[in-house]
Picture (tube, rainbow, N blue to C red):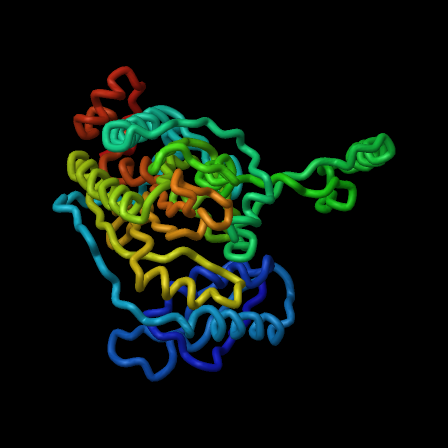
Length: 411
């Protein structure tokens, strides 16, 4: 291992500390760990950062790496407007999560780590995930009468291009590739793969066809692509879907909190500005009511997306927070620790314009979406209740009555 201290030209205040933290690993694949070094003239409790110490798996050009860090800080972190955290709702539950949940889940065989950012779920975690999704789906049908779809896994890259995802979140992109359709390519590849003890080697893209499919980062892009260029017959439309979603998390992946391969239940609202805003807020209210029914500890707050590597990154983050376009539901997973399990997002006309979706009056539709990471939601439940089904709250226990129990290591 190698260690380098990368000094900043200007300290990053405590208000921007999280924005800095969420970007460091994306500076270089060589970074295996980092810590933020206090520094600067911040006042008491400001927690300002004056440098970042990184560890790498190989020698690197520290000057070049420091230049990357300072560029990201100067263009994407410091220009963001400082806003005070705004909590919209806080759970009355006094429940305190345990501290060793993931280790216990692994030890009891409830989950299995398949690879970086990939976790397989067994009983009773899988039953909890399905039960939680069922409770969300009841809200979606009762409150909005949504049309449900099951989309294919792969998403056209053109949909991500139209949406702006390619330029806003390049750090998360995961593409699906295939070999060029030519017998010589197949033969050469097969011979090369057979000669390698470790498989196909690190690089195969030189033998691949143009990449026109990607792994979807979330479900809503399928919906927008589905209605691209359409004039909707109804003034307001609601669509829901559950499916696999994929985001490269670099080395930020951990336990079931941040996965590269996970499941989302997402609901998209298309229609008038009044309808989509009202629907977003109604869903948030129903979701917090569900959290209270399950007696889970958490909160809902104004948030922002992890825009990255774009000229307008700071402005996008600041605008999203100031206009309160994104709300996040956080649930506690440890003492002083919480994770976002759901988000409630207003898009204004962004996706309506990008995909050419019109309402029956010929005007561009507004949109909103609500998404829940089902593995995250399940993990929060397991952190707060353990994984003996008998200890779970009644709404879940009723749905998981015949689920095998795992009791060793639980509360």
